[in-house]
View (cartoon, rainbow, N blue to C red):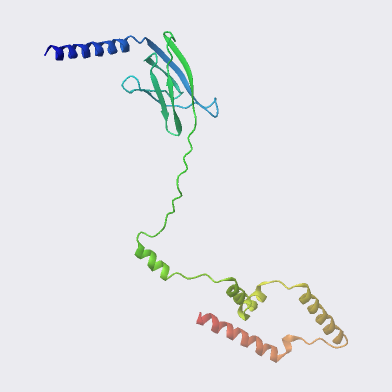
Length: 212
């Protein structure tokens, strides 16, 4: 029983000695400013400062990156902020009543995996759209469509004449003028065949518009 009481007394003295040693650490007014490590002109605001050696006591820097609080010599302080790598600082012994330090936090770059967003909510919707999907034409099919008679005819009505067509038309006009230079030029208004053709074209146009 006496031996157990001696062990308890020894443990009590050890705890009191440790507590007294911890309490004997002098207080320090720890102040400073937090900067960006890449550029000293960039201030890092609202940095969380955790005192690991003193019950994880938390302090915070202001919007200008400035902080000032009371700590102990040889306390370990951890600086953390979103987007920056954490940094640990230990207050050295024998600093006096105040200790000023400039903290530089290095920006942290995190490469996230690529995310693909699909417009289908379920696999059934994807299967349905896949089965009804129209496959695009390849180069050979596109060439066949562009060289078809309907495509060429539509292009002739839209595209301008090239140099060869203009030269051929001018040559035909010159030949027609030479052949009819010594004769009277017929007036199309006095040609009954031309009038019949004009009336037929007008009638055909009215029919096409009414059908549409």
